[in-house]
Image (cartoon, rainbow, N blue to C red):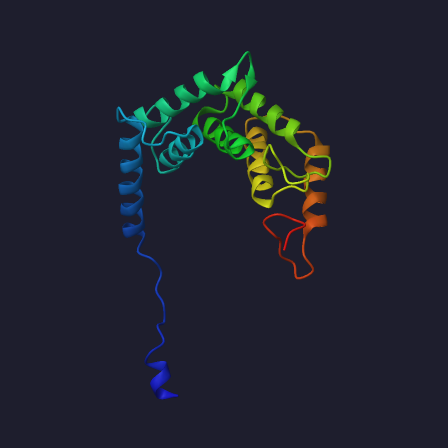
Length: 190
């Protein structure tokens, strides 16, 4: 027994200063990539996610990187008051809503409302969300997470999400939970 205890680490909490330094380096790199003349994050969903990460790391909404991502989003994804995501569909909607709500929810409330309307309109009859092409309408646990994330962002800026949307989502989760308490990525598949 004595030799085993010598090999077991007691563990230590991560150094907060080291974590902060790593976050600062990462957000500085993302900010530089977002503001460079090249579109290294060519996909709008990736750009929004990178912009959200920069915002969450302490840059404000007026920083060049975050402001550029928001400006591009507003220009590219809102037409006649309607939200039109790119290929990442509900994933992108959840990130876009969160970015706008966290940047300045009051200023972007109309856009967050449009995103919430989009997400609500994409909810399946069974309460889940899926990719646009879907898989027989079962839903996808990951897509559901981002749909709920976007709707949560909407509620944080004062947008009312119908109770029925939340209830249907909760029912979808209850109905797709496995006997061991876990969930599959795509319910109805092995």
